[in-house]
Structures are given as structure tokens and as C-alpha cells.
Length: 410
Image (cartoon, rainbow, N blue to C red; front, side, top):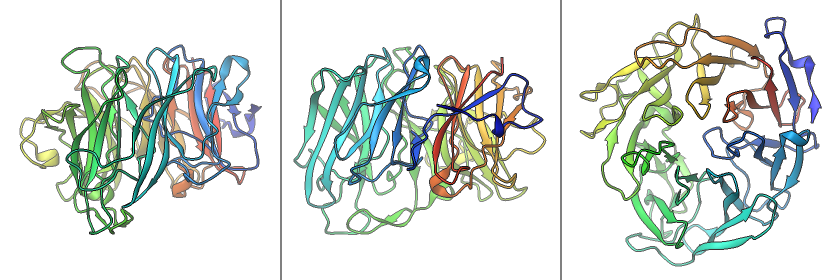
């Protein structure tokens, strides 16, 4: 890795250090900030080369997932070489990487393989293969989402994708849950609006919450018969739910859909709690806020008008809330977020999350300007190590998208 003190600002905290983790002359990126790609000791994480913040090209022979060892000076070791490797998750114990090998084609089927490997690259084996139409699905599974999510006990993994048979527009998308002990897979959710699910298992070990998945629904989405989007409604049509991983107990979060506020499309659990956090944009006054809430009983798709919904604006003490992407540490004590792009490259901010669910973040700390162009393929997407001591982000400030690390704010 390469030290990048030139990215620090006079307003950056004393002692802050910035490093560029990837340095090849091809785009490399951190995996989407909600992904479980860190070992629990905060020493190793997975990044990917020849990729972008929203995934990779399944036919790109240059694409690799790389294991980054922070204790070894950021040394990068390929952990996948297969064409079509996608949707990685490191187990909660930190000993295995699960990922998929995508050899599917929309409408015609193909083969999707769930694979696991030890982090030292040994004992690579197939866990499950999907090469037929799943029970209850209208067509073969294809277009796997570039993110998977693994349960807090390491026994189940979820992945979403397209279910169309190639004969009709606006065919359904679905969410699959894999039993990692048996390889059995179940289709627990399907419909045209589940096209951009962002599934995220709760990190809670509470038996009442350990099977909960945070999911995004995009009302009004349209796609052609191959599953190619012709109209992705994004945040303006989105609402956020929680569902058990057997497809039962759908619940609602009180965000967006009132004609003024909208979910921007990123949300996450706050540590191991049952609190969730989203970024909501507003048309009037123009801003982008960080709103936390708990899921309540499903009544429909009412957004912030959901009966019984209780919200807390964590960003209300910031002088100019304009937050887009964010993540917390494992304990849910600290948050990192980006703002911009009107700042010219954006900004990274750090804050402490209050235990009081009515209080705002009141210790905002400016870290630095990542210098990103903010094109869709260069989103900053900051996240924290599990221990909350180190931050990570993307930037194309050099002219090539790369992975970065920042530390030293303690």
C-alpha cells in the first residue's frame, strides 16, 4: 500500500493517516459497504480488482477478489480466479469465504454455483448448484445480485436475482436463502418490485432477530424480457422492509414515499441492534439526512406515514446534512459517511452513534476530501473495520478508481 498524506486537509484531525491499498493501472474497488467482507479481528478484508463500487462484469477475465492483510502492510492475495466470481461473504467466525460463480444467462438458465474456500486459499469446494428452475419460480435464476449476506450464526446465506423465462417484460425477481450445512435453497420472495433487494441479515444473536433480513422494494420498476432495466425507480419508488428468512413476518420501516422524502437506496443495520438506518433525500428543503428507526407491523407501503413508526434524525445537528453512503462498526457505536458531491470531490465524516434513540450524532468529525469524481462508477462508499478504528473508501482522484484506507482519529 502507498501512503497518501497529500489527501489530508488542514481540517483533518491530527495524527490521521491515509493509504492507497490498490495501485495497479486498472480500476479496483472496495465491495459495497454493507457487505460482510471483514474478518472479525479487523485484520483482513476482501477487495476486488477490475471492478467498480456496484459490482463487476461476470465475463471480465481480469476480475479477482483479493484478500487484503492489513497486518502485513496491506498485502493483496488473489482468493478467486474463476470467471464470474461474485457476491462474496466472509463467515462471522472469519475462517471461510463464500461466493458464487455465475454462469447463467437470462431466460435460458445456465449454472449458478455457491462455493466456499478457507481464507488461506485451501479446501475450496462447491456447496450448492442451481441449474434448473426453482420450485415456484416462473423461469431460471439469472442476473445474481453482486452482494450476498450471511446470517450472524453462519448457517444461512441469501442472494437475489432475476427469475424471468425470457418471454415477458417485468418478470419477477426473487430472493434465495441457502442452508450452508445442507446446500438446500429456498425461494422466499418474488415479484417485479424486488429488483434491487440489498438483502442484509440482522447481526443480532437474539433468536427472535437472527433470521431477519433487511430488504429494499422498488415500486414501479420496469425491465425487458431479459431482465435489463428500462426504468429503475431508485429511491423515488423505494421503501424498506424487514422479513424473516422463511418469507414470513413482513414488516415496514417508516421512511420516504410522502412526495417529498425518498429513500436514496442505501440502508443498514446499526451494529448488532434491531435499529436500522437509511439516507433519505428531501426535495424541500434540499438535503440528505440519516434517519434511524425500528421495523413495525406491515400495513402496506406508506413510508414515513407508516402507523406506529418512530423515527430519529441522527444528522440534525450537522450544519449541512448531505449524506449518501455510510456504515457502522460492529458494536454500532461509530458511523462513517460521505457527503457531496457539491463539495468538489465530497467529504468523509465520522460520528458517534447515541444509545438514546431520540438523540442526534453530536460529535461530527471531518476527516478528508476523497477527491472522487462522483460518477456512478466511482462512488466513495465508506465503511469501517469491525472495531471502528479504521475507515475505507473508493476514489478515482488519481484518474483510476482505487481502494483507500484512513486511520488515526483516536
